[in-house]
Structures are given as structure tokens and as C-alpha cells.
Length: 146
Ligand code: AMP
Ligand code: ZN
Image (tube, rainbow, N blue to C red; front, side):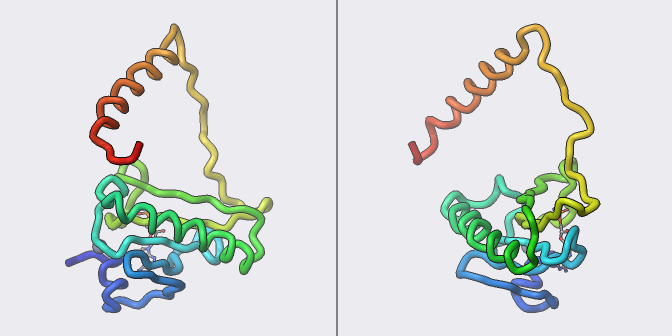
């Protein structure tokens, strides 16, 4: 398959692998926002987060949670961003699901801030809430976790 992350997982492409389990692998991002920028990746080829089976999600975020403080401590960062880009509109460029752990410093030049804040007008705040609750409730009836 023509997927660079699958090639890394299969050891057919070079990578600076940091840690792996049966289901998840993590390696350094080759073009880091800051040094130590790490990707946490399910070993199965899933296009984005929505495709990752529910039973793998716990493994994925458990490793994100475990690695983050270790990496941040090791590179003496002052904070970190956890980012997942899903779909090209969201900036995804490698279509094999991954979570970024990005070390941050008060004085780094990176800004993930929003350029603007929208306002909900004319009752649309409660309308969005009502509609989204209805969508979620409909879907949640099929979920196993309660
Ligand atoms: P995204 O924009 O969320 O899809 O991020 C993809 C990330 O993968 C980018 O930050 C790239 O720098 C990184 N990347 C692409 N190819 C490689 C590679 N061969 N090894 C490590 N990181 C990579
Ligand atoms: Zn893949």
C-alpha cells in the first residue's frame, strides 16, 4: 500500500521510532513544529479517527497520555498541544490516522490560535445545542458504552 506510515510500521521506511505496542506506534515527526514533535499512530491503516475501531481508541489515547509528559519533560517544554487533523479541510496530509504531540514554549513562534471568534445570534446557540443533542441521542442509542 502506498502509505508512508504503513511503510514505517512494516519497517520498510526509516523512522525514529520511540515506542510501540501491539496496536499503536509512535515516532518523531520528520518536520517538527518544535523538536520532539511526536506522532502516535494506530498500526492498522485507518484513514482518520472516525475509521479507527472503538476497541483501538483506548490504546491510542492511552499512549498519547503516557508519552506526552515524558516527551515534554525530556525536551523541557512548557506545555504541549494534542492535535488530530481529520480530512483535508482540517489540514490532514497523511491519510493514516495519527495524533500529534507538539511540545510548546511560551516564547516559540507557533500560534494555533483562532483568527476570529464567531457569535451565535438570534437563538441559534440553543438551536445548535438542540439539533446536535438530537443527532447525538439518535446515534448514542446504538453505542455500547453508556
Ligand atoms: P497531518 O497534516 O496531520 O496529516 O500531519 C502529517 C505529519 O506527518 C506531518 O507533520 C509530517 O511532517 C509528518 N510526516 C510525513 N511523512 C513523515 C515521515 N516519513 N516520517 C515522519 N513524519 C512524517
Ligand atoms: Zn497506512
